[in-house]
Image: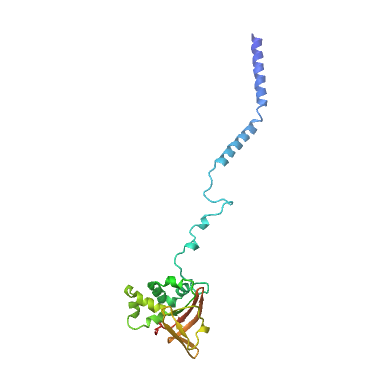
Length: 219
């Protein structure tokens, strides 16, 4: 009986050694494999960074940038340029700020943003301020919108007329149906007595001539 028991222990010992040799590596190797498995699992399960990846176009740099197509009102830059429309060039000149306000008050913004072409004789601020009494304040009242509109139409001529077209004795027909007379005094060009201070401000839909007076008209 004792012999059988010893034989059983020997057989069990041989089996355990055989199983160990078939286990696929040493204890150190098995531990290393386990670390790689855990590390690999952690990398796969790590949440993505909230930032953008190199393969993804960055979005943070786009935030807060204005959309050029949604800028709203059309106003000029800080200078008058040929690529801008008449109204944009008028708003770009600080000396024409009163005219800008008058055009908006009269509702002529869309007209001067139209295809045109138009020739505009644009009075400087000092020209409006030189009007007698409280004429300017009266004209800017909502109840006098038609009077203001008629006055401003006296400064607009259909077509593109450059300084070369403003010859002595020329008569111009305004969009209100009235007439402007061009005269010359020495080197100065006068339109209904108002001197042209700056001629040929080219715009994409016409031309502007800045004048030193508000133009009175005759039938």
